[in-house]
Length: 375
Image (cartoon, rainbow, N blue to C red):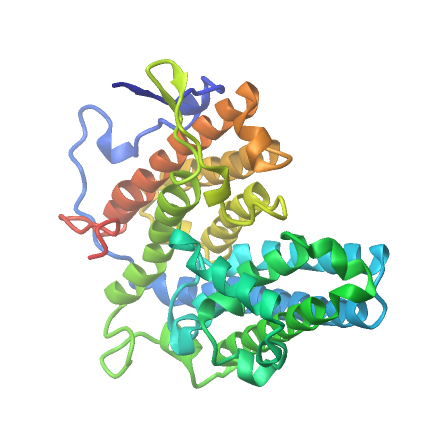
């Protein structure tokens, strides 16, 4: 059995195949050590120019969603339902840009899973959400009791079913009262979590201090190498997430010249049609972190071309994801969009290799170290 991934843009590999100067023929590779003088500035910019602005944008977006959800419940109509759905889509985009920061405050109190429970294996979460709506469980419409329920019933996945799932048309009329109040509680919960994430990072004595000042007394990073590993690990593990959790479950590529078995209903946000928009925001978030932090400054002069390759891939992948428009099941049935998905799958794997092997090795984190293995 042969798995084929089409590459619709044949010149891509040529555009990014330039090797670092030290690897050119006739030149001995230089020993790689971390640029400890550059690292503190890079870590500080990661916080100030990406993480904090990203969480501020998420906080503002969730506030708008909570307000739109409240308006929908107070004055149900097609227009207010459309407004709530639009606000949901905006939150998905803002979250997708910063969900790559899966560490620290995002892991405390299960905030990450409470914001987005995915993948929902065996539809366990979906069944819980459906049961809440079917029974009219009032405890789920109360923000305080909702927060202590299963993580699967209080985040974006649950709200997507409320707004787009079976029976959601009732939201535009009075018969959807409980469903709407449950959705409003979820939106308020998301607003609370986003506010907590922002507050944790804004605290000058909290995690941002640990990021900005690695050292022997630092609870997170005892030295610059540990800090650099964390920062690059964000990119590596996020690309892994896209490849293994967002693409692979839904798209099987082409096997022996025929389309493989696809699973569109395993895609994140498939009901709302936000699957590929979320993927694009993932790539754009990674590029914003890479450039905002100035990670190129960690590279020695003879290896700066690696940053250009990473940037080119991230930009190209985001644009490719934008071209896979419409419902994901329709995209999987269309040859042109399937070819673009194959392109994304192939080049996401290439991006992972460039970050893990090329960039990591060039900044002195090589010698057998593998981010992709979680080391």
